[in-house]
Length: 306
Image (cartoon, rainbow, N blue to C red; front, side, top):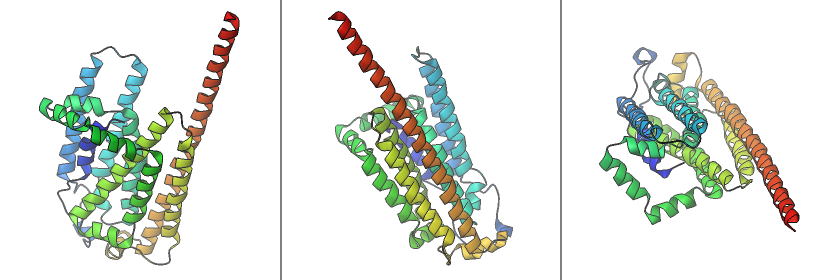
């Protein structure tokens, strides 16, 4: 994952134009009360990538199949980001904790890994106005920032940051503050999306380096995310008081809404992380077998020469 695309994508969740204030009744709810700033930035992201990838497509591609797959990953990730930020799911998250959890899960478990796999940084920089692309590229190529990103993307650091963000933002005082203040809510979205990009980027880097640490990385994440989901599901008390006003308008008590949101965090996230860990095991075994075959062939060639 190139560092150059992070600034562009993170802007999508950093500047909401409408407040996520708690307390509106169902009569005031509008299914398409979406954030126009997010819509504009999503369109900018799509246009920049489309222009940049067209320029890349003019060059000879060493692996046309991989090039097409990366485009599929990008557009799939972009579409899920549209669903999370520019669909009825966004205003519904103001009303129901379960919808809020679903929004975060889409961004963290679907959008982020798809965008990481698509490696859109170079294409997006080419698609931006030349002075913006060159300026951003020059900034991100600086030695200090490159070292910082490399350090941040080590598995242990990325794991700790992911853990701290996930658990910290679900503390009742911080989560409720995000429901009542536009800028805190924007920071929450930004934090979740950024840490998800970092999390999956660190995993890809570890795999490229031939490390098996990704298996432990994913299994332990599945455990702590599932524990948080279970705590939300089985808690006898409502953690987030603002939903006491809105959840009943949708036929749920605030506690039932919280239990449903906890299940959404618990089950899907656990399954995704465990499935990714199993894929890491399979990938490591294939790579180990391939390396063993290469070593055997090299030894056979050496014996033949002797």
